[in-house]
Length: 223
Image (cartoon, rainbow, N blue to C red; front, top):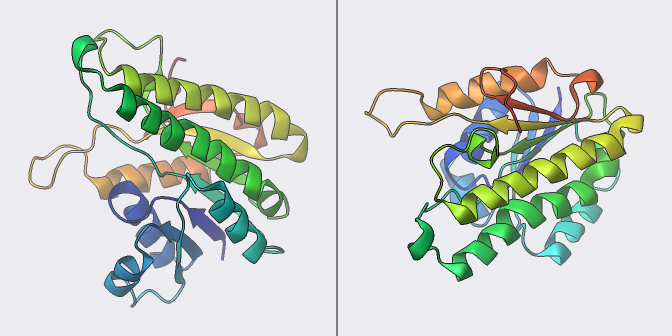
């Protein structure tokens, strides 16, 4: 049984990550802004632990790390983030931009720094960042979305640097693009499919793959 810590589990990708890992019997520490609501929805899953965490509050992050002192975390999934909107040049909101940088870029670094020792003492030693192909400079052919693109491009750089810094400790650091997830009933890639495939990438990764940027199918994406 692995121990998995996931940020941003209130809904969407984070919630599905937590449910899938818990369903296979792993110990899951699901962090949420509203842990009571999440816990009430999923109280049947006995290996699922829900805790309150605001990833933009460093004191809160450090407090949780201290509470989990001595716990080996096999997989840390930095999932919490702001997914949109994606306005054009003249509609870009600078307040939202700064908030996106705080949540999508700085917070995952703070969480990773706080839990590096927990991951290092585990058997799996994996840190995954849920990023986006919209953070790829090479794949940007449609412009706009300045706030979101820059937050994810910055996250990719943080991930790459962490991979180098943590490489000597055999920690595998990955960037994962979840794909274009369709809304329920729209067809296309479902949340459950996206998470299942990203979990496969995580399950099969090792130290030699650290610093890689993958899509949900395990295909390398350009920076």
